[in-house]
Length: 374
Image (cartoon, rainbow, N blue to C red; front, side, top):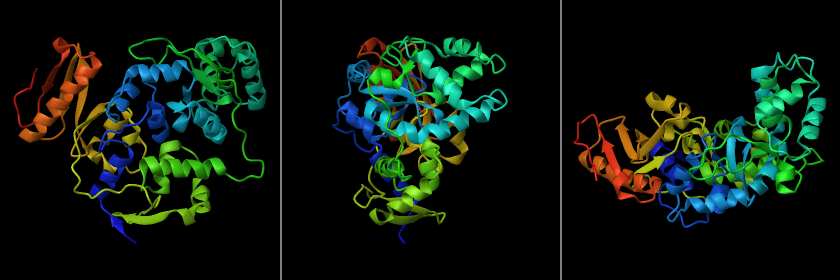
């Protein structure tokens, strides 16, 4: 079985994630290809799409959200994701058990003795009037019926697991800060979620395997589960095994993949790319070593925004009054420093609508390369 080393996996990941070369895709197609985008920080998907698409305009994503073609909802790993409406409807039932178990993992004592089917029915009745509500408002309303559980636990279970809901715009629109207001997914989209297969088969799981591999492969089953949090996926992989090809990584793990998916030459040049906080290009794997060093793995769950240099996390970045501030994690060569500064200036221009007065990038490296500014 062919062994794929770390660099080969890195280049495959960059290609699948649209980070090796920016893509000429409509925004909806890009979000669908990426199997959604992690979006608990509402503005971060805009940077993620800017880094991946050649001519990304934030208004395009705004229009998809207000036009109800993309939604913000709890899905993979019980995390808010930005996903196409069709995927939210198709995937949600397959995620129900995982979402419920993850909330119970935090609030099991609060839900001791609570009939979760009865609870879900109460949530559906509460949301039936289609009035947007905050999680706190929902929790307080439900606490009348279950006072011992407390409004926080009740609200969390209601919006994250019991009933599929969406976070309404203007939450998640470009340069817009709004509190979370929730309504039922079915009422927002005018369609019910797809039910589980009546015969006990797992067509959604099989489809998720194919979609994941197209955007993240080659990957191990453990990577697939780390991305979505779902159990039972080895069975879905086994069901489509004849469609897949297999490799090994340097640790001896089996990796599966779609036969015709891109696996670029490991020596393919990789441009500098700036990733937003919690980008699934890093979080979408159990083995994150294909993009980030173990010494810096904690950054991926701490909300750090990172920059890729030669395909790997080499710096963090922040924005301070219109200035993109880059802090390298290793010594940068002069050429790397220049590339980071130039790309950072492009990012600053995007974040400031091209206002040249705000296009200023500082890059300080361990090599003490002078800061670049424009």
